[in-house]
Length: 233
Image (cartoon, rainbow, N blue to C red; front, top):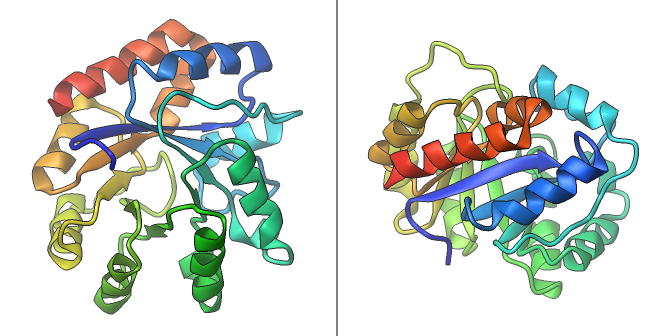
């Protein structure tokens, strides 16, 4: 069970370089509650420009096991022909589940296959939904017993738009009962993270804002996460 309120961080495996990546992942356990391991892809279609660039910069992924619950975040499109390969990777890195942001948007017909594979590999299903989501869909996801449902606040990671996102958080909170709700995309200040939790999110994920700081300094990036964590208490 993930802690409430919880702080998660997203990072592309092996970025910005092996040395920095290994150092920061080892230190994440003392700061965050869960970790989203970004599996490098050639087409990170629902990520913003900064994370897209990071995917292209990774020469060789580095697979580490942080001391916190870890979820492999990969695009279903890359593994649709052989999804077992993705689940084997998740099992090898000690992940609790596979998060595929394009599964329900582009390949909804594979929903049952995804859940079946999750069960076969002893992993918990986890789901991503965009800001505009059908209520019946969210109710179906909640019934599948996921570790969490991830609500994407905006159209892409790291890009804030003039949308009243707290309203969407409140709606999904009412639909899923006690299922853990994660909010992410453009969570870049402690105050914003706190507002999302106040609106009903159980946890938040920081990606682009963390990675921007990490490219400058691991110390700055980890200090930023600690500020977010303090704001959630």
